[in-house]
View 1 (tube, rainbow, N blue to C red):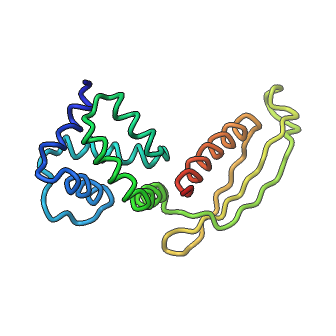
View 2 (cartoon, rainbow, N blue to C red; view 1 turned 60 degrees about the horizontal axis):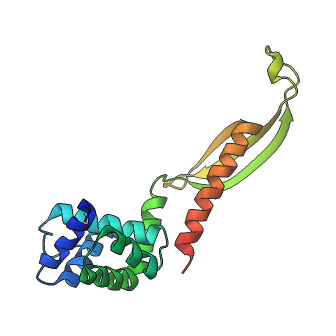
Length: 176
């Protein structure tokens, strides 16, 4: 058994393992927990597992398989499965909220234009297309900030790949 399974099998030492796991989810989601979780290492492992299972939109069978491969006890697998399925929506909401806290700004409007560089002090930059992007961002206080970007084809391609990956993650969180 690997260290991960040893830590998770520690759930069996709790007086009520299912209640312990629910407390871990409560703490993860920012709810007031009436009793301090004794083993912080165990609690951290449990919370990480819940975040991973729900954030990766793992089905119950996938969670079960992953825990079996780690060498977790059958009862631990059963308990995690019950709690993950019972609290999935709440954990998803927490993950969405925490992801949206990365930046307090929200996109209000945007404008774009395509330009071609006709003159430059470097020959390699001549006749290159550049996208001009103006973002109108709403600040938390309601005011607006404008940001102007100029993106070359390579930078724009990288940005689109990154945004597509982020969109996929958000869709997985919305998928129910």
